Each structure stands twice: as C-alpha cells, then as structure tokens.
Image (cartoon, rainbow, N blue to C red; front, side, top):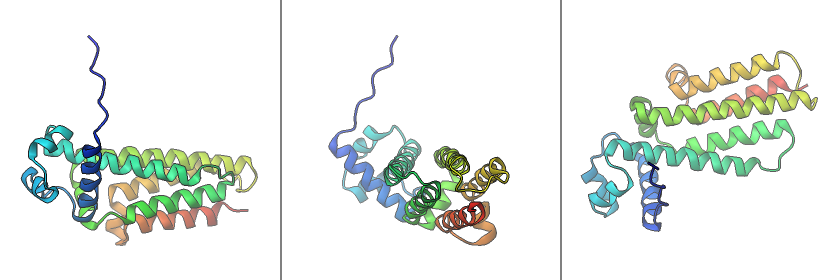
Amino acid sequence: MRPEPRRRPTARQRALLADLEALFLAEGFVAFTLDDLAGRLRCSKSTLYALAPSKEQLAVKVVTHFFRGAAERIEERIAGIDDARKLIGEYLAGVAEHLNRASAAFMRDLAEFGPAREAYQVNSRFAAQRLRRFIDKGVADGVFRDVHARLVAEMTGLIIEGIQTGVLRQRTEVSDAEAFTALGELLLGGLNK
C-alpha cells in the first residue's frame, strides 16, 4: 500500500505558518493553547488542526519551518562564494542573523520541549557539517593553515552542540546568535595563515 502523497500547503496555510513563526519567535510557544493561537491568528482551531493534529506537532512544524527557511536563506546568501574565509564568515553571520530574530522565550521553549529541540539539533548538525566542508576547502585551497584542520572542524561541531543545547548560553550569558558570531571570529582568526 502506497503512502498518500503530501499535499502542498495552501496559500492560507503558508500565511498561517509565517504568522505562527513570527508569534513563536517573539513570545515562545509552550504557554499557548490552541484556543489562544486561534484567537491570536483569527482563525478556527480546525484551521490549525489542518496544519497539524496537535499543539505539540504544530509547534514542531513551526520550529522546523523556521529552521528550514533559515537554512535555505543562508544557502542563498553563500551561493557563488568560493573563498572559504568568506563562506565561513557569511554562513555564521547568516546563522546569527536568523537566531537574533528569536526571543529568549522561544529559545527557552526550544530547549525545554524535546521534539522541537530535535529540530534545532538536526539544523545544528547540518551547520557543523557545512562548516567542516568549508574548513576542508580552505585547507585544500591553501587559505587556512593545515594545523589539525580535522580537529578544528570537530571542535567546531562540539561548540555548535554547546550552543544548541544551551550550555554556552547558561555558562556565558550570551545569546545563541552572539555565540555563532564569536565562533566565526574564533574560526577565522585561528585558521587564517
């Protein structure tokens, strides 16, 4: 038996996702009920149920939508850049820019709600892989020192994991956006010849 093909969201559903994303980024998502969301967005609960079958699944859908959109815009931002230094700088600036849109309430809810946190983890792992490739490219192109480039790439992944899990935020009292900006400065300062 074949699974049913996924239907593309309607224009109204895409607009609701965008509105939910803006609301969640500004105020978080855990405290809202479906009634609250329907009232804030001036829609019915059945309209929200058409997006996802539960509040929890709606939160995951919106968080995934945010990270997927951010990743797409960051990839567009770096398209055509060949210099590894510029790739790292622009990539991490894009990550910081998108995370700057997220309130402390959103980041707290993200850290505390496992299914949404998983969406952030997936995105963080992807970012770490991209940065590893940029570092490898910089070493191969001769713009970065070849001093344990693989180790630097792995350490970058661990730092991203520390940002994503909230450990660095808790220990340093800096936002995730600020941490990604500092990571860019650290990488570029340490890798350049």
